[in-house]
Length: 228
Image 1: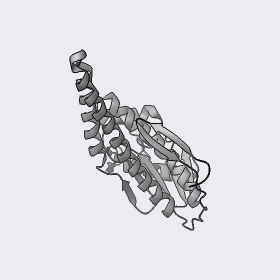
Image 2 (image 1 turned 30 degrees about the vertical axis):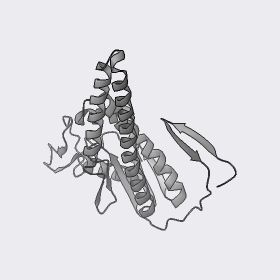
Image 3 (image 1 turned 180 degrees about the horizontal axis):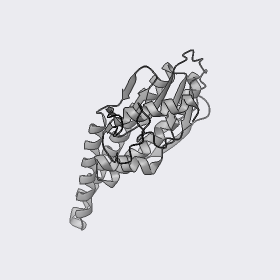
Image 4 (image 1 turned 45 degrees about the vertical axis):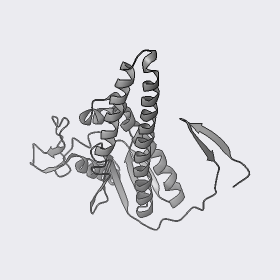
C-alpha cells in the first residue's frame, strides 16, 4: 500500500482510499457514438451504423428496490413511540442496506458502460444532463421522491465516471445541447410538437416510426457531425 492513504466512514462503512498511477492508453478507434440518456433504457447510442442499447430492462430491478425502500420509509414514519424503538432501528438498518444495494447496482452499470464506450469509441457524444429533465423522465416510471432522486443523480455520476475513463483510454467525451432532439424526426427533420411522454416517435409529417430514445440518439449524432 502507498504511504499516503485516507480512512473514510461512509454510511456506517469504512473505506481505505489511496492513489494508484495509471498509464494513459492510446485509442486507435476512429468511430464516434452519440448517447441519449433515459430511464427505461439507461443509455441509447447511435454510431452511424448501428443502435446500441445499454442497461435495457435493468432499471426494473432498481425500481423494485426503490419501491421497497419507500415502503420501509413509510413504515419507519408510522412506528412511533418508545415501544417501537427496536422496530425503527431494524427497519432503518434494512433501509440503509437497500440504499447501498441500489447504488452498487447503478455503479456496476456505470462502470461497464463507461469501460465499453471509451474502449470502443474515440469520441463519445453525450448531452448535457439536466436534473429537471431526468426527474421528469423518472416521474413517468415511478412516483416516489426517493426513486426520482436516485435516478436523476445516477446520470450525473455516470457522466463524471465516463470523463475519467475517457482520459485514461484516450477517448474524447463531448458534451452537446439536446434542444428538440427528441421531438425532431430523424428522417425528415419535422418537429413533433405533441410528442409528450410517448415511448414511440411517430412523425406526423412522414409517418416514420421509431423508438423515442433511438430517435434522440440519432439526432444528437447528426447534430454533432453537422456542427449545428
